[in-house]
Image (tube, rainbow, N blue to C red; front, top):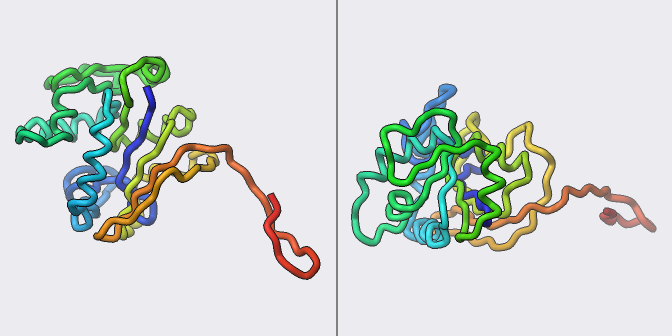
Length: 208
C-alpha cells in the first residue's frame, strides 16, 4: 500500500487544530479553527479526491478519538469522507483498547506500519495525527505528502516538520491555489542536497 500523509497547514507550518477552537488545545493552543474561514468548495473537492483513493486509514490515537464522535454523526448519503471513515479499516497506533468502538478500528504498533505498506489494497492514508506523521517522516516511510497551506499564521503549535525532523528534499508533483488563497501541493520525498553560490568571471552562479 502506498503510504500518503494529508495535512492542513498554516503558513508558519502549524497543523494543530485547523477545524475548531476545541479540536486540540494541548500545550495551551488557543488558535484552533484557523482553517475554517479559508475552507471553500474547491478545498472540499481536493479533500474528496484524497478519500476517493483510500484503501485504509492510519491514525494516531488522539486523532482517532477526536474524529470518532464527529464523523459517526455524519450520515448524509454521498458524503465520501464520512463513508470512508465510518466503513473502511482504521489502523490506530496505540497501546490501549479502542473504546467506544468505531467500525473496523484496529490497534497496531508503529512497527506494524511497514508491514501494512507491503500489502495490496490502495492507499494507506494518514490524516492529522501529528505525532504519528512526524514519526513516519523520521522513519522515511512516507511515499507522498498532500498538503493544503492556508494563508494564515498562528505562531506556536504542533508542526509537521519540527526541529527534530531529518533534512529532506522533495519533488513537487502537483500544485495549485484555491479561490480562497490556500495552496495545495503534492510532494514526494527526495534526497537532501546542498550547494553554494560562487563568483565566476565576475558573475554569480549556483553550484551543487
